[in-house]
Length: 287
Image (cartoon, rainbow, N blue to C red; front, side, top):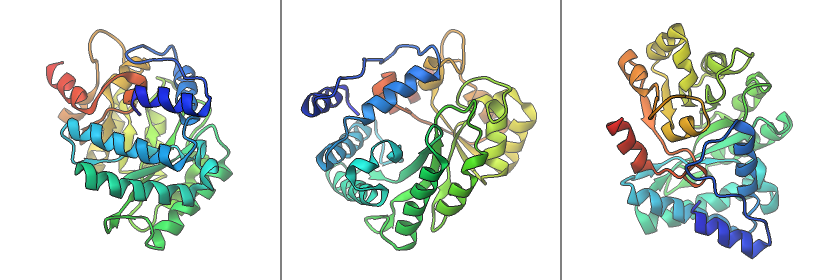
């Protein structure tokens, strides 16, 4: 979401605007999560969703992208739009129109939230399954929902309870694509490298959002390389959340690539981190 769009939507709906956090470090995951949840509060009307999808596609086109995979935190706002199935249908239609206008094709990742009840995740998964198996999850004839994810703080929220939700959702071309190994460096069960390991071995994930903390475990890195598990690296996000520390980028991207682990480069959340997709590529090239 663009900063000006956030300001305008908050004003329209009488909601206090969350603070501008672009380029600022977060002391831990909690304040980031609060800002993210607060931003979702401004999505109140179908027009808000359509505007958001169009602007994401338009900004991505300016970065040179022709295919993007936005992750949707539907549990935070779908109830205001009649539930997850209705909300997804709105977003799929908006994506078709955005592609017509910008040339950028979209495949959505629908994600559950670790701080929400597992039952909501399973209901969300059933919505994804119904649309995918019924042929309604399409954008211009192709699969419009490409992944089912898991967001949020990993410490205290190991991925095991969401295993059934992934089993339900991952049908008809929908693949498991959880966040793992994002934050913080921790030996706690379900966090750090262990989170990545579980998602690969028990959720069947062959793509992981972030995954940078896997770099702490050489055996796990080798395992990822053997299985060709792709890590979706978000360098600025990892730096501002304190996942990787030190001057400059300090991303383990090079370590992963040299070990044979496939990776992609991503912007994560430009609104909260003040980055762009093209800027992330430029930064990785320079640093």
